Structures are given as structure tokens and as C-alpha cells.
Length: 430
Ligand SMILES: Cc1ncc(COP(=O)(O)O)c(C=O)c1O
Image (cartoon, rainbow, N blue to C red; front, side, top):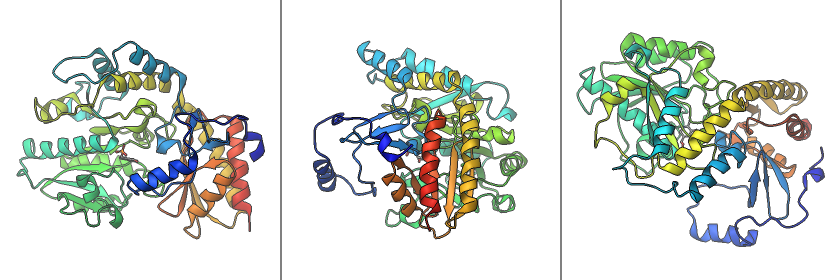
């Protein structure tokens, strides 16, 4: 498939407004915080794996909003549920002093979809605390571990410690950037939140050595996305589980980016046949349509950590988000997106490895399911991302050295061929 064959739309595609691209750039420049270095495309519409600009140029979206658009953009079943909620007058935010059936249904759907977490605390089922952006639910996880350390382990309040990992990425709010190991995420934003000890990702001995009398939990991404598409050595998650059990720590996994089918299983921890004590979900939880995240844990732990007044959120778990959440979980299961990710990811990785064998630019290809990183030798991944953009493919870099490939999980064979032809072109160049 050539680039020209994907210029499908003949008429202009405006989407939301007829504002010209130049005016969009100017408005952002004048009125927006400049906290992103954007590619110069104005997206006017997005459908499935494709996004379209005003001239009708279509780009294969192999980033999928860092896993938020796992079912593809505007999945018709999720859109239908959202539109029905809006026209049915049961979508708007409702005061948290009353119940809504979308929230109850989202909570029970999610609690039952996740395997029993923290089984050492008993088979009480899971409970779910919903929020909006992913970082909010990471903070819920941190609060749970700290509370556990204080209430159950007798650690003095204010002294609790959580073990985290170098090159972690858990979001952008103060507590979370406080334990980032990337200086630009936190420089000048002090005072930072104490209570975190960072150790090298994948190194179990370092974790064991970091456990002290005030340690209450371990917070990990089972695979690091922002940190360079890193997959830890086999046995790492099992080892973390063991260390948590040996020392009575809560093992908290942030699967905001790698959960919900991305790596070829519903949950990344299933690759090692363990279950954490707490799980953070976000991004694809609503199919990429409404901000929705959740902290899920054993019912016993949730009841221990939170009582009336100890947490809350105006929009967390509001009806529109919950309706999207239920529909997105239905799509994930009914359309077997995790299996699709495993099968398509395997095909894609196998063929990328062949390109890598012929290329002088590629250092390593790594990945599971449709979570694939191509590390380049010169640490100039963005150069290749920009070339791919010219060929109608959207990807970006992770940590400067790795091209991140994470398309919608239902990417078709023809779309994979299109992506591969682009990769072949940019990586076989001298
Ligand atoms: C692993 C992980 N945790 C947390 C976050 C933060 O989520 P949000 O940007 O929705 O706050 C992200 C976002 O990329 C992520 O990849």
C-alpha cells in the first residue's frame, strides 16, 4: 500500500470547526501551555486505527494515545452507549450524595472482571474506587499502601515508604513526579513528597535490599512504557510477589498503559501467573472516550483504607464515564481484543525482527502483544518517527532511544502491512 493510496477523502474534513490549521497552531501558541512538542498535524476526525487531517490525508495511528484507544477510535458500540446516555438524560455529573445505576454497574463489572486481588487477604471479591485521569488512581493506590502500613503494620504515620523503580512513569501530579527519576519532570516543582525509594527496574536483589522497617508497599509498572518500552526479566513479577509476601507489603501494579489487553493478556501480571494486591487502570478503561481510571483491590483492603470522607472526586465515576467504561469492557471481552493483541503483535514483532536483521539503525526490538519498542543505535528515535509521519504513520519515541509502537488492538493484517512497509522504508535507508 503506498502513501497515495491512503489519501482517501476527496473533500475537506473539518470535524469540529472550519478553523484553518494555521489558526489552530497560532491559538495554541498564544493561549496554551507549551508542555508538549506536538507533531504539526491537526486531527479533524478519528475512526478505528486512522486519523484524518483537514485535507483528507489519513494516518495510521500506531500510538493509540499511549494505549487509551485500544479498541480503536470511536468504537461504534462505545459511541452508541455514550450517545444513548446523553440523549437519555442519564449522562451528566450527579452529586455524590445519591446513587446512580451506571456507577453501580461499572463498579460491579470492573470488580468481577479483575481476578481476585490480594488473595492472602481472603476471597472477599474486589472493590473499585473510580477517578478521572490515571494519576489520580495511582495516588489512591499510594494512599492505600500508606494507610495499610500505618494501620496494620504499625509504621508511624508520615514515615511510610514505598519502593518504586528507576525510569518509572505514573503521571504528573506532585506526589508522583516526586519519585520520578527523570529530572525535567520535577525540577523547580519542590517541595517534593517524601516516602519513596527508587531502585533499578528488573533487579530483585535491589528491591530486597531496599525493604526497611517503614516499607509498606511496592509500586511498579509490570512493563515500562514511558521508561523506554522496557520488559523486565522473566520472574521479576513473581519475585516482587515473593518479596511482598515475605515482608507483608502491598504489591501495587500500575497497568494504566499495559493493562486491558495491550500486551496480549487482559492484564500484564497474567504473563507471570501472579496477582497483585492492588491494580491501577486508566486510559483504555473507557475505550479512550471519557477520562476514567480506577484503583481496584481486595474488598477487605478497600474497606480498611477508605471510610466516608476519606476520599472523593466530583467527576470520578460519573454516569457518562461509567457507561463508557461498561461498554469498553464489553468490547474488550466480546471482541477478544487481548487475543487479537497477542496474535497481531506476534506477527508484527516477527516481521520487525526481520527488518532489524537487515537494518544498520536498530539496536533491539522488544515487546509483548501490541506493545513493541524498536530501540535505535543513535538514540535518535524521533528522527525515524518524523520520517514515518511523512509516510502516513503516527508513532513517537520513548525515552529518546526507542520508537514506540502501540496501535489499536484490532489492527488488521492490511494495516500491519502498511506499517511494515513504512518501517522497512525508514530503517533500510543507509
Ligand atoms: C503507566 C502510567 N501510569 C500513569 C499514567 C498517568 O495517566 P494520566 O496521564 O491519565 O494521568 C500514565 C500515562 O501515560 C502511564 O503510562
